[in-house]
Image (cartoon, rainbow over all chains, first blue to last red; front, side):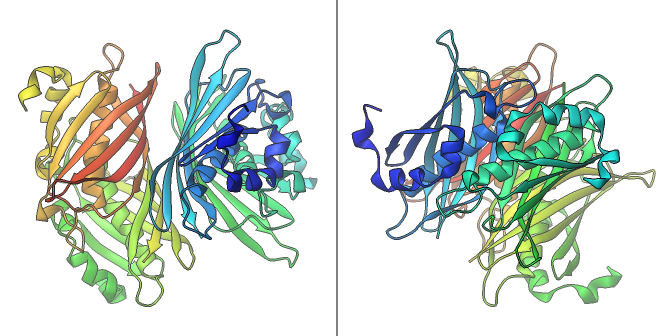
Length: 140
Length: 140
Length: 140
Length: 140
């Protein structure tokens, strides 16, 4: 979190009010214009039946990353709500840490389209793409 | 849970191993051929910044409902993994309880397509559709 | 088309201006509140490499069906644009005729969520679900 | 098409059998490992009710671009079918030419996840992103 000086204060304030992020143990690590990164360390309380992280935990975090990326591009006085998203799960979410990044592809007046990527950091130091999101956010 | 006699045992056994469902406080209430229903009672630990249930909590549960609906149609000896899903969030997830239902639209040899619906039960006794999923599950 | 008395005139007028529907040979057969049905007869000019109807031809028609279903629910003076859609292709689009139906799941003030189904009619008289859409339409 | 030496022959052969691409007037201009580009020049026969290119025409071409990008990564002897796709329509498809590019994000043994982008070339020489796809392709 050495880069915390670059954290957009509006994103920080909203993130801290999302109890779900605390429940998951997610950490906001980057919030710059158009790009937000949230880390999700492995926790056994978030697992599915095979002990990997549940697709829904992964999705919760990358949804927030995309939403906050959109918030950095929101018109003055507007908030962001998720209209819909689509996520592909590319391989089992194994790893010690999941880096989840939301990026704005296009921000219009009412709608932003975002891309989200979830990369697992393995014990070995390798990284693997585990999920890919495409999301529609509304400015309201 | 008076209808628990109709709970598919394979679904029950797998559901009980999903720590994520315990963390969310989700309850398996129906698991019949092609249809699975999971209840998610409101908890403040699952909220987003406005105090409503986080889209990711809703999504985690309806993903499990769709996956287990597919499992009831899986060929002998096969398991189910989520290939991808898409969810529309129709209104804020306000309510005391969220009934999340996964239904198999089509089950092929390798792929099942499922539909998921999330209905909020309000204090007033009214119900409202809050989210709608379309999911692709693989038999592996 | 015996039921043409039930065709919403606003839908008919817009449909007739969609050159793409003429190019595909699509026929508007139903346009009632919340439900629109368009028929796409098989044409070899719409095929993919194996001689079946191209996924894009199927999609073009079911997108129009969903958009027009939304139009029947649009606030006075508003038009409909497709924000996004997602389509599952369940089996190869074989058949003599494809019945493509768009249905409004929910219509809000600014956004409608629609479901689209594509059913193939085979020579044998059997019908098969070949594709399923979930779409987001905006009222503008 | 000066770069035609780089066109993957398997893609060329399959593309030429897609009558739908001829009907739309689409041109294969690039087919390299993991990336395929197809051009769609404007034609009034492909329009929707406001005279812009129909979302379905755009989608047909970018689906083919994604499918062929996957084909360049297919295991020996396998073909590609579209399992599902999701497309955001970012602005009206105005322009003289639409450059549609499919890129493989990840190719596994059975499934490839692809990203598709549609860029409009305007009279003024400007370019605009008009649509973004995320697609799931199966190797069969």
